[in-house]
Amino acid sequence: MALLPAAMRSILRARSNRVLRAARDLQAGGGGGGSSLLRRWQSSLPQPDHVDRSDEESGGEIDWDNLGFGLTPTDYMYVMRSSPEDLGAFPRGELCRYGNIELSPSSGVLNYAQGLFEGMKAYRRPGRGGYTLFRPEENARRMQFGAERMCMPAPSVDQFVSAVKETVLANRRWVPPQGKGALYLRPLLMGSGPILGLAPAPEYTFLIYAAPVGNYFKEGLAPINLIVDDEFHRAMPGGTGGVKTIANYAPVLKAQMDAKSKGFTDVLYLDSVHKRYLEEVSSCNVFVVKGGVVATPATRGTILPGITRKSIVELARDRGYKVEERLVSIDDLIDADEVFCTGTAVVVAPVSTVTYQGRR
Image (cartoon, rainbow, N blue to C red; front, side):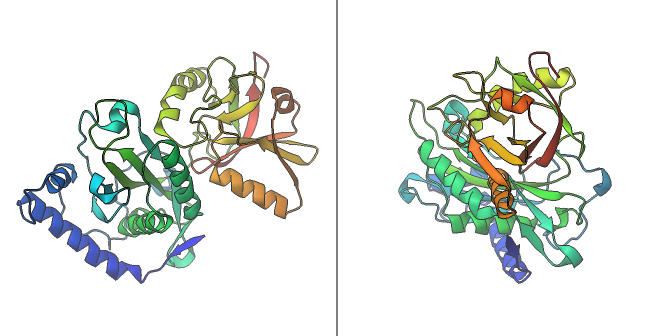
């Protein structure tokens, strides 16, 4: 767990003011505006807002008791760039007002899906005593691993965690009351520089935005209903299924929409080679329990190594359960005593029914 000290507030206010002043200088053409780097920053920064709302405690007109999992724009986002002259480093980052960004039509992320994202949550601590993050260093390391696979530079673990904390503190009025939800954080790493031929982008952007969220599934904490899809596949050996690249998610939309149109909550995918072994659900990992033994598909390059998954494995072993990370067949699933899913968004979701080839 990482705690956000209240002492950072004065630092945050001073930095936020510097960000707004810098943005105004850029718009006015100051600070050596003739350089191409500054022009890129000028075109990409959202319009500055001269009102610092970071001290406001209310999250607007939000009904905290009926908070779903959707986008509610907050006040600030964090932006950091890596240019060719930075040699793969991210020299500085700044808070900006939440808003649209500009990208070249030939940017690497738009043309070749050179991008990664993470998902994490901040919770309000009891008695208005600050905020808690869940293992943010794990997200940072996973982004670094994915960046290597996607030929991108990545922020250091310290840079990543510091940026997350700043984003939470800048948007603290949007953190739901305890027990009402969490502030969801979405770190992005993308090839933002222009590139025409198939090659790594020349410039990269690291960005974090936030939104208050409730339960991910419409069922809330009630058990969910899955359908096994043996036609569509989420990943393949040698591909990118083991990293959190943006390219992994749009391909599951077709299967997911078909499943939801039939009344199912989500889709459980099988491996693409044997079409027999479980991989994961569209946005979460899966566990099966039989005779007190907890089993989950091993991460061998086609399954995302979920941080909640890792935590469940560790907690279960600490409490004396036998945990197996192995190939889990469709027969294991059908014969299981219990099934559940894990993920940052879904947390831990019990499964009520699984439908496979017409059998519920």
